[in-house]
Length: 247
Image 1 (cartoon, one colour):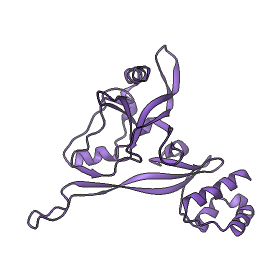
Image 2 (cartoon, rainbow, N blue to C red):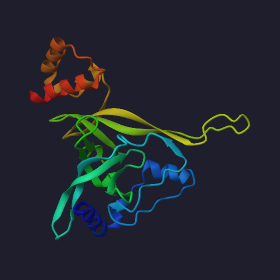
Image 3 (tube, helix red, strand yellow):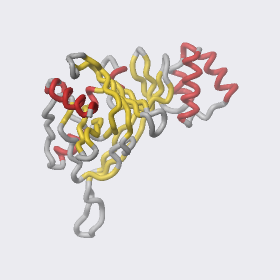
Image 4 (tube, rainbow, N blue to C red):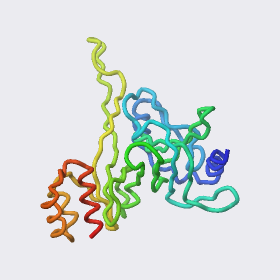
């Protein structure tokens, strides 16, 4: 009951102006005639954005996982105290809509959402990897980066795998009865190194990675010579970044 009260309390106290950004899912909704799902209360919407006419992959992990979130700014909670953290809630992240879905009441199938633009990070207690995801824009002084990245290594350099969607429009041919009637969504990933100086997209190869570690070039090259990691493997790249952070 506490979790649900926290959700409703936040919904009532946050301003509408914080929801100005339009997600990729909303753009698709507009283009496919399903319209714009206008938020009605603060950070929390009353329901997720409609996905009618869309098929494919929407979630990093489609299962509900218990976890916690850290908001960009503290908000007033029950009792008048402010906090930027909400813990012990069931969540899953919809990449297409840039919405963190919150299972407020499982028996009633009551799902609320937090816009991605309001989230600094979120973490699940189970699921793929270590379950920690950060908002790229939180590391980008220009505010141009988008999406959430799974943290693969953290420190002076934080290595993340960021998720995005690729959208294929319907190509159904009624004359031949072939093609796809729905808009198809697929997940894709990019890799980034995050630091105090910003966000840098990298490829999983020696040239790209060394360019981001030039201040410790000698140590990194020695590590590569001795360990011979496969830099096309994200886990081994994470090991390289952890080594760099330890120096």
